Amino acid sequence: MSAPRSMLVTGATGRLGPASVRALLERGDRLLLTGRNEARLAELAESTAAFGGPGEAAVLVADTTRPDGAQHAAAEAASRFGGLDGLVHLVGSFSVGPLMLTDVSSYEDLLRANFLSAVVATQAVLPHLTEGGKLVYFGTPLADEPLAAMSSYAASKAALITWMRSMAHEVKNRGIHANAISLTLVETPEMRKEMPHVDPALTVDAELVARAVRFLTGEDSDGMYGSVIPVVGKFGFSSALAGGPPPGAGRPSR
Image (cartoon, rainbow, N blue to C red; front, side, top):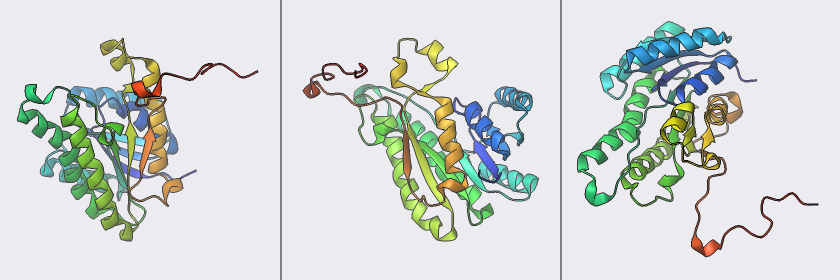
């Protein structure tokens, strides 16, 4: 099992936050959880305290999409834990809409949330990292195969992944690992209330994503630099040319 680590978790109040935090606390990690919503951070702090894992979690209200907020959070984490071993960057946003009905400001907002926020947080964390540091980001298969009306979201995530792969070459000679997880819609109680019509087979459980987070922040991923791990469940792109599933698909063989 990987040794415990000291990590900065940005955007911890998002939907991936609770599961990812629990997975890291189970390993004994020491975490500084940041977010802009003080009330939701307080709820997260209460839930992590009730979890009772071997790790330690503290919270900090900070806007890590801004350089001053990110630098403050990184310095606070390094000071509190006597060093910093990595970043799990959960900040992100989603929007959908056809090009001609989407204002350019929507593109700018998603680029800031999904791409530039990662740049800002990483610039703040890197001065504190030593060999073995781990940087984890979150992409989407839509960055490679974008769908109609998702151009702003897909483009922002494509920028993130391209940047991450380039940046990974810069930091790997310092022994720092930058990698990403590609995922689809995350299955959470909140998502199910908002989108009850979505086929559960096309979503991915937050716990499965959290396992990938723990893997990419642990020693078992030491050979990985600039990789993108797909955690997409049974999601797949379909086409009328495929003609549907083959006869007997899904039936157990005799």
